Length: 255
Ligand code: PGA
Image (cartoon, rainbow, N blue to C red; front, side, top):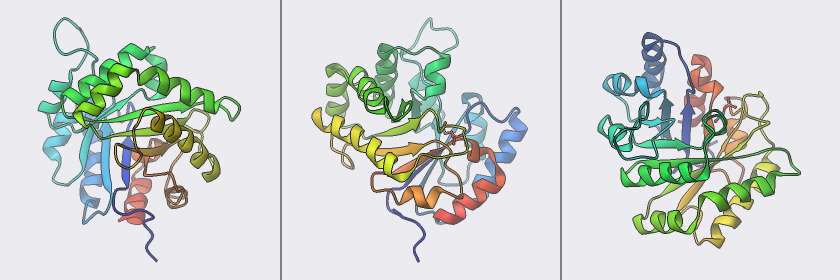
């Protein structure tokens, strides 16, 4: 049996969030990924805290790509504490996570800032993983459409199209993130279809212009099942991405 449900393009994002606590621990954790990276048939991307990007990149002897968990919406200048797209590209970063619900909440992101981040990503050849979150079943459709409508204003839509920038949209149901319980396949497909229907209205075609991911308590015991959901082109994995046993199992399941 081919255990890998969609071997060709399966995107697997590992979101370390604000972990681990020291560079030594980060290097030890990354070494686990490094050692597992043999003939992979999926696309692993690790989103590490920015301060670890450069040292881990130097340690990297694998095909694993790095992503940042945040990017400034500005180009350069008097923006204390921020990190620009050009800085990130200069240390080999390839992907950027934009609008993760934890970032959205903690940094109180408004839509203009999210658009600015997306534009900076495009301008610096970084591939965007745009997170959209939803609450419970009653509000999910409105939650998703509202975010997409506000993010993809005509200016951003034109910019993305004119640059032919391929991107990912990650469905992140808030109730499932960090809960240990993933959303069921029926609802994952339903919510991802809501996203695709909206995107079709602004003339973005799934699997051509963008791909759709699921994030929220993905781990070694549910990943194959979730990967079989029609609309899922990959995962965003949080908690399991910093657990050595889970990392090993996930790589072995997918390779
Ligand atoms: P989780 O996080 O896997 O710990 O639920 C997912 C995410 O925040 O992307």
